[in-house]
Structure formats: C-alpha cells, structure tokens
Length: 215
Image 1 (cartoon, rainbow, N blue to C red):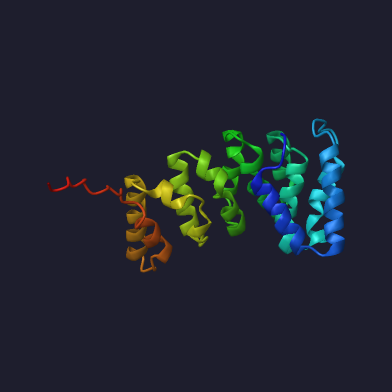
Image 2 (cartoon, rainbow, N blue to C red):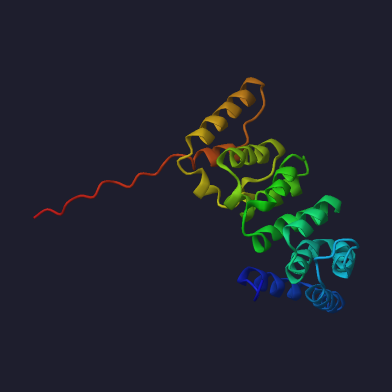
C-alpha cells in the first residue's frame, strides 16, 4: 500500500487538530512504530498493537476510534490482522476495525466482521458495521436486514452509508419495511420515524419523458 488515501489524510489532520500536545506526540510515535513493523509475524502482538489497545487511555475515549484507524492504516494491517484484532478486542477496538475496513480491504474478504457486528445489540457497533464497507460489499439480502437491524435497535438510519442509493427502487426492502410497520402497529407499538424515511427512498424514480420541441 503506497501513499495515504485522502480519507485517511483528512482523518489524521482532524485527529491531530483535536488532540492535546501529549496525545499528538504519542500518536506520532505510535504511527512511526506501526509503519516500521512487520505485521506478517502473528506469533506475538506487534508493538503497534499494544498502542492500538491503549489508544483510549492515551488520547481519550472520544478520539480513540479515529486514532485507531490511523494506526491500522500506518501498520498496513491486512485482513488476517484486522480479523484477529476484531476477535480479540473490546467493543471500542472492534468499532475501529470496522471503520478502517474501507481504507484497508478492497474486496469482500472482511464481510464476516460486518456480519458479526450486525448480530450484536451494541448500537455503536451496529452503527459502525453499516458504514461504507457494508454499502459496497454486502449483498442486497444482507444489506436489507442490516437496515432493519438499525430500526430494531434504534440506530439512526443516517448511519447507513449510501442509504438513498441502495434503497432506490428496492421493492423487496419496501415490502419488508411494510411488514415490519404492520407488525409494530398490530402489537400496539409505534412505528419508528426512520422507517418512513427509508420507505420514502424506495420508489424507483423514473425521469419524465422528453418532450419534443414544438416547431
């Protein structure tokens, strides 16, 4: 992996601007270590992985997600490394792995991590799972269920990347939303406002026919 993608560069700039001097110095050293280490030997955790785990303590919980994404990119973490960190990590570390996927994994190889997060009831983990990586790689069937998962758990659908693009013209999604709304109504429970927002996106927008100019 050569160069720094614009998304990572922008994230690093925002992160640096939000950190205090001590945390910024720590991140600079941690990314230098991550960039220098070989991630191929998985017998023992690399030094940068220890920094990955302690990011919240060093930089503050509110900055830990972005700091961890920056570290993962600096380390050029591959799918195997990301999977190991996800499986061994706490919820906050798992969120960072999910957020890093679109920057580090070009194909669908890491979808199992997204699917695992969507099986949880941790709303912050679910929100991280429906980001750009899911938008690009989840099948239509699994993506629809991811949208419903957000409605079930109260995750705002604004967290779903490319929602309007993927929902447009999706008659099956509209049917599933209608079924869910009827179930909620029959049970005397309110229908989430977000359901109506998504449902409004599902019709296929057909451009009006071109009118020939009158001579």
